[in-house]
Length: 455
Image 1 (tube, one colour):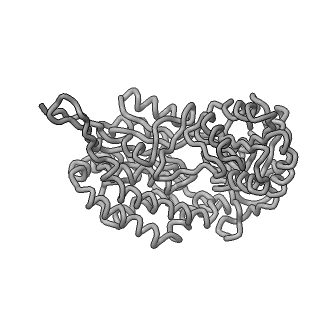
Image 2 (cartoon, helix red, strand yellow; image 1 turned 135 degrees about the horizontal axis):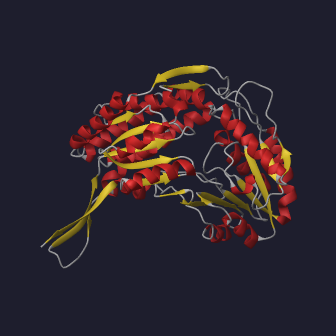
């Protein structure tokens, strides 16, 4: 198919149709990014920062405009769309203000007269990004890449091309060189040729494990650096000293934010036996009370999934879990209404081998698991092929920290939902990927860490 179609998941109405690029057009955009790189890599950090701050201004001054596109294309509630745009501006400003320090030369004392490590840009970086955070996933790669002196091209999800083109236009609008960043509206089967293009020096992907395996395989055959941020089945351990009101509030938001479509969402909620029944009772009440509805309504807690096929796949996972012996406590039924809606759902009596225990359920479905004690809770949390995020909810912060250090994940938060922050590295282990985004660790993924020795 030579077109991509944006469909409003709340109404099932067609928003727009976008022509896909031809092979020749794709190659031209990649070549243009390379030509721009040859000049851009010599620009000063001051010039780069000025433009990056202008991009932040553009996002902040037109938050509603960008938010409305995201809400219409993938169903995110309008309030959360605004927050996403604002977070993008924060990331832009962070790298505008800090890149010079993050990439400063590092002098190393050796027997040489002078020896140091310097960090230089690589070239054109390809980003393959998903639809769940249609702006933030892109800016998370783009801001550090451009500030480091690289250029970029984007293969975004087909259902959020409006967001993809909005970013491309914003980049040009604020004065970045034309062609420094381009949206490649191509089908998934065109990715291999893009990765293999001689001008592409590295690839970053956020998405599913199968997508990561495919991209990493192609990049590996071509000896190109990759960073992968893949799925998660995040465990949140609720200790028996936890404040139940706070714990259930966190668990509700953690499961329903972004309509449940977040890699680092609270998916497996592991509750100690002593408070399990009380937690489940209150949690069910809060999940049931959360308002599902039209994402443009300011009072809506969560909206539809991004596409009908995603909703249907989620429902199959719920049904499979029940067939395997899981218990449905709440939800689990496709509502009789237009749109890709799925109700807040709770599954219990889960064991290793069940769909909801082992796999990622990308939607408003919570897996609540009983643990005998703290050691058992840690064992259950680590019994996963994923390792993106994890959390601990407790009044005892020292105990929470001790447990967090034992959890097998790239990020572990105590008394707060896992979140990405430009000041801290973000990424996973196991099948949740490798490499890091954000902070000084992330910006160094796509530079040449070069040794200079002078005798």
